[in-house]
Image (tube, rainbow, N blue to C red; front, side, top):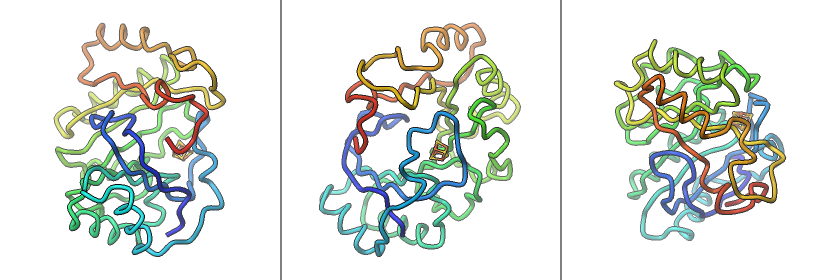
Length: 227
Ligand code: SF4
């Protein structure tokens, strides 16, 4: 697999937020979201055998625990990634995969929890989520919308209703987008959408979703990578 980085930190943005987690960040992405904070994954990285990636995960977290497969878009490396995720599950790890849902998700093992980041209009990558992937969602999975304004919010709200998402998955997450050049203050001043405004909208519409913040950007400087 082509790997950008492997590191241990706290999971930052799902119902698992705050838990220790080993991140396996794969290189390459076929989208170009306007607020992407992972552009350094688009190229480069290093070629690693799955066994070597597994050894590094074991070194960082020898007694099991949480492993998140992320990117970039990890499903671009599906052929090698699917058996690797099965290896992790068989070894007793709880595995999350973060994906845009642009690639088919049917081959992701059922015991792997998918966190599907459906792109909203102002990401610049609207309509890239493959609706056929709705049938690949299980009750443990999560669907996330990263929002930069009211237009994104209304898109997400209506998508949740239209597809009955709250009944399909464990959690629907609405998360304010962060400025990609954010650095310095570890607070919500870097959010493109004020979390308080988002909270007001969600309460007014009684949206069956939870407001999520990227907690790693409130713990460490938002510009720091590998945390
Ligand atoms: S899918 Fe993720 S890694 Fe790819 S451009 Fe969008 S935010 Fe960045």
